[in-house]
Each structure stands twice: as C-alpha cells, then as structure tokens.
Length: 300
Image 1 (cartoon, rainbow, N blue to C red):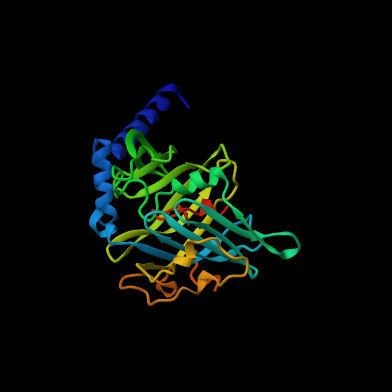
Image 2 (tube, rainbow, N blue to C red):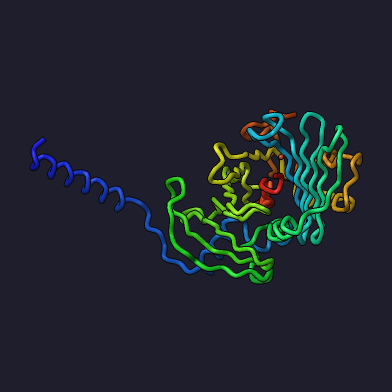
C-alpha cells in the first residue's frame, strides 16, 4: 500500500475515533465529596439505608476451588458490623462469624470432625474493614473514613472514578464508581495474609425497596484464572435476627440457613429470573461485603 493511501486510512481512522469520542457522554469533573454524594443517591439515599438494621442474602457460590461447583450460602448482617457467612458443600458447613470485635470459623477438621478456630489478627482487621451493611462510602465521615479522588479509569469499557478510601481500621481500599450510574463496580482490598489485593466486581444491580443491591459479585486476584462468583437469589431487609447467630459457633449447632420469612415487597426471589436461580437448591462479600454488603473474599 502506498504511503499516501496509508496516510488517508490513518486520517479516516482518526476521524472515526474523534467522532466516537465526541458522541460519548462527557464525564463530569467532580470532587471526591460530590462523587460520594451522587453514589449515595444512586444507592437509594442515606436515610433509606439508615433504616436497614439487618440484611440477609441467600443464593449460591460458584468456584473452581471448591469441592463442588455450586454451593448454597447465607450471608446475615446486622449493624454496626456483625456478620455470619455460612456455606454448605456436600452436607458439610463452613461458617464464619464476626461479632464486631472477635471472629470465629468452623471448618472440617481431621477425620471429618468440624473444628472451631478464632480469627487471626489479620482476619479481624479485614472483617473490621468490611464496613458492615452499607459499605465504606455511605456515612463515611461518621465511620471515621477518609475519601480522596485518584483519577479516572476505564473498567470493562466504562469510565469510572477511582477513589482511595482509608477506613478507620487503617486499611486503604480502592473503589471504582461508574461515571454514569454512580454505582460501585469494583473494589480492591488487601485480603488477610495475602499481599495481592482481592478485586471485587459488583454486577447486576437491582432495586429492593428502593435500594440498589448487586445480585452478582465476583472476586479474585490477578493470578486467579477464573474469579469466584456469588449469585444472590433472595434479599431480606430487617429480617428477624437471633443474636445467637453472631456468637462463637458450635460444631454441631443449628444451621442459620433455616432463616425464614416472607420476601419483603420488591425483594427478588429465586423465581424472579435471577441468573443461576435454583441451581443449588448465597458475599462479602463482600464485602463483604460486601457488599455493597459483605464480600465473598471473606470465605477464603
């Protein structure tokens, strides 16, 4: 191809790119405080979230690292920062409980006997940094968090503000807020005992009584071939909570999966077309956590 033809082609490509960029919605230049304000409004508003004293998610986990590909879970959270995460795999329960100060985990031990172990110091710090039901941005000043704007990135083809959030526990997370929807689409956390940050992606937001909740959460590290996936099938706001759910668990205690209660108005269920609904019979995490309430990274 002649040099003149190459030049003409380059000019056409440049013109096409310019037209595409020109047609894209402009990204507002906002301060960190303004981004948080828009984010809180997009999630449903601060006053609406303050009315949520407890929340329960049920669904299933999908992980190539698990003994079975799909595992039902329950994530139960209560203010200010209590949570219980319970996973059932092949009839064996893995339970993680945090009462806001201390944490415990029930895992299969030798000869099939379950063992209760306390959280390590790193795990306690990680759990404290999860920020409970509504995450680190809602009411961030009252929680003792500081937020700063680091830049504007492209996440999976979408422009997103990158925020650095230093939480009261000393951990610094990075959050990406979609520049159009102002919903959180990614969070990077330093997992307990792991120098590589865990990336948490929030997907498939749906309204539950006016609150925006992600119904799919993926977690993984940069070296992980396929992320773990949490699919939420049912959400309960302010369900009846037994305080025993947040004390030191027993190896043969009653499963919290027996949590009952009618879906509150607007709360999707497994029959509402949730991706993967009914595959197993779940964060976080998340986060979690997540997230957003809880993080599935807390399972590992």
